[in-house]
Length: 65
Image (cartoon, rainbow, N blue to C red; front, top):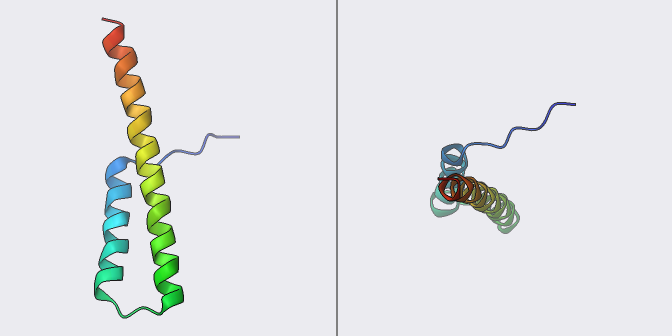
């Protein structure tokens, strides 16, 4: 089975921006607002995970020099 590719950080940030824009500018119901907020929080987790992974890779490269 093929490994699932993680989205790039810039893709995550663009999607997060869309979620924030919806929350700020669209008249959403409480339920829809919660759904969009939850989706945004998942994107934040993905972004943090991506940043952590890159930091670890850079540390390995820097320690190898």
